[in-house]
Figure 1 (tube, rainbow, N blue to C red):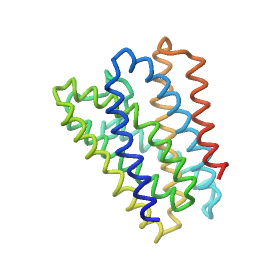
Figure 2 (cartoon, rainbow, N blue to C red):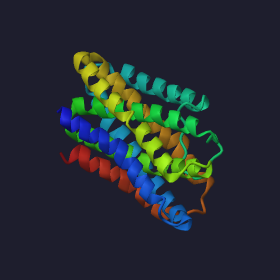
Figure 3 (cartoon, rainbow, N blue to C red):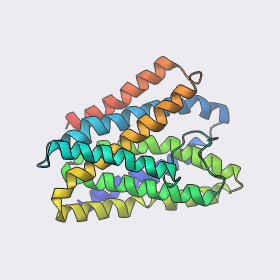
Length: 246
């Protein structure tokens, strides 16, 4: 099981960074045309993983459903607090008002975000491999457009491609201690598992509703609305396949 956790963690971290790095090789016009679709697909995977995978599993455990949903609500406010303090911000554009020009702030924020993603993957694997796989897919789908924006900002701040890739790769490795720490800690203290999953679901819901959907609404002219809607449904469908098809 440890090897499976390692593989999922690396997929959720390094694979996202490398894919985003390759994405930057495309011309800027191509990137701008593709990003709305990627963000729409990520929105669907995040909401699908939260509402079809994580929350039903958490509520189905021995914990009271009201307490699990209360933990989800509390988690949303926790991530709102992180966002307001710029410790855990999200952006999927190459120019964004919430990004700091200081590369160190971006890397620190990404490290915290990746650590939380690791906690999600580790806790999901304790429930079932299918849930862990669908959660990892949602992490990857969201991380690719975010890392693409981060790369572009670091490069515009004067960082070399090599330095930006190295820094983002190191930051992404924060997923590993989060995954292994959560997996082994929660394996010894199972009563906390449904609440950790609820807070993990809250992170997906918050990113989708407070970040991705408003960003799409602020820029309605980028990409086909019908295609973006279809890609969002495709993201939900992908998660449903992994959750219910195994």
